[in-house]
Image (cartoon, rainbow, N blue to C red; front, side, top):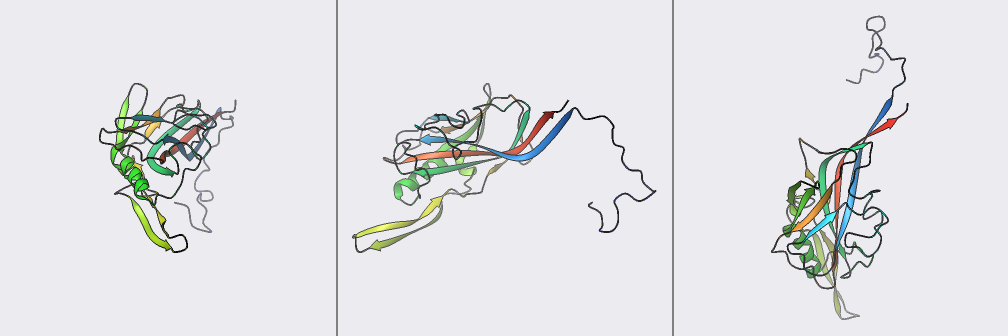
Length: 235
């Protein structure tokens, strides 16, 4: 397929060189792999029967449960809810990552260790009761429970307790997560998002979902993995 060192792919005098047009191309297509991500903040309180819409708030603006503007760790969207003109995106995988927050509201400290009963309960609550849904304005398509998108079986990790005689307390070390690296895969048919198309991902909770534990918030980041095609007009 790639030839053998020392042996040309086109034999001298035996096979003609493929013809090259003398006309300049009108368009240049660029292809590549890309991820798009967006984050929803869930403050302390009830989430049962709730729906939370992601990929609607772009970088630098306030929304999706956050009291502060979304930064690059929360989203990389330049325009909320729409694929830019001239770019097509095919999604072949979805990952969901709950991030523990140390307070019941957006306090800019998402990413705390999930190492307590309440924090682990929040994680399991999202895994077992939330469903990922595509929303294309007129059409909604249920993808899968969060358990299958970035999880794969439950909460993983190791925790250990260590006594602190000086303070007379017991500290917990370690971290539990939802199986980093796993994704929901579209094995045969990627989800096609043409240029100018509108879309969002909805995080939908069932009626049996527990409330987010007191004094603890959760940021849920959804990542779309895919390919892009960019058309560049040159003439």
